[in-house]
Length: 482
Image 1 (cartoon, helix red, strand yellow):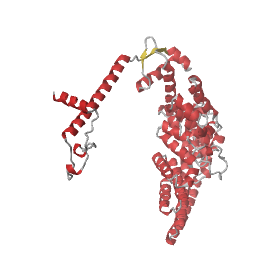
Image 2: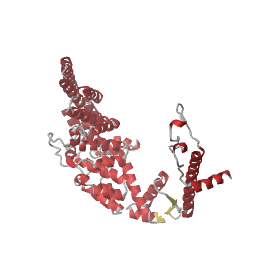
Image 3: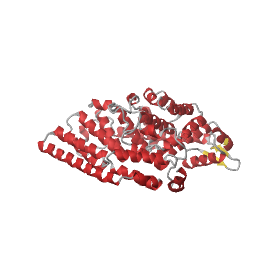
Image 4: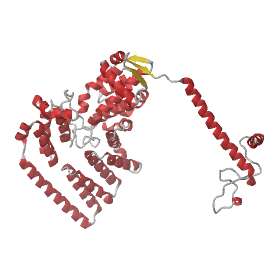
């Protein structure tokens, strides 16, 4: 099955530049998906469209999950994927009657909720209207109508009478915005809740979810350092949450699990922080420690990087590359994050040397000379590495800076700044001594004891201020006149 698939869809995917994962991940698909709630179909579709070895199993599971839900769009997406990759399976599993039956049920339920909402509006009971919009929004969200779900949740705003109502509304909007991929809306709603943190006690209780959502939005926008800050500061109360218990309010598995917080936070930190920051902000962070314990390999990778054992760190990350390429949120950023981590490692390794042979670099990073040459060339072009490449002797040369010229330039800059400051002080002193001032329109010079530059006017004080002293002032004035 995998061979026939490889001959078709995945060859086209490779040619089109889309990621294709040839290795098996370290997780079991069913156990992995069971940790999430409500996002299993998109996740399974991603696995099916990316991994030739797991395509048949993942697409079959995605189709089964779609049949259990109410979203006709997910059913169509799963069926289209199967028709393209495993058409024989699609012919066996398709259920045309399910679409018609489910569409009628969705329409009937939508009409019922809208009629109830109309009745609540006629009765002018704000709490009932708010709950009506909430029920309608949840129904639209479950059936895949995300645009109208956002509108329904947004209309709750005028009928929120308590802080908890505002919190519920914004949490609902955050969840829908994540499913939409509208990361700006996610950040906006998180900031709104955080701005009311002192007023709303519920916001403190949801701090972990807000940090995780904000970190995910920043990760999606490739702001890796800011994303790392959010993830590593996530409240540890989410770490022990039970994924299989719907009543556990700390669980956020409709978006991500505590394991995801550890992985996203650890990778973003490795890509954006230096060794000192990794030690202080990640390894010594008591909040993030609870999450790192769920993913020991991330902790080991960070520890190896801090200890300058770059080869061991990169080896751990490479062994989990397949897992990360099958992650819905992480997949678009895996290559860039890995490049930045590897670039930082090469930079740190190269600092003590004036020149390094490609063979030594390749041995240090457990790769071949051609690969390390391509990586170093890319880093130099991007400005990530201040060095020169000697392709004849096959060595990497550090750029030699002119220390004497640098000192002279710094001294000249300092002298120019001092000269300018001295001239301004002399000018101020001359203006004060000659009684010059700039008067605003509509004001008289005699009505104020201060000139326009903030100094006291000589007519309003018995002593004239001078930053250089009277003798220095006279000598400077005589020097200027001369």
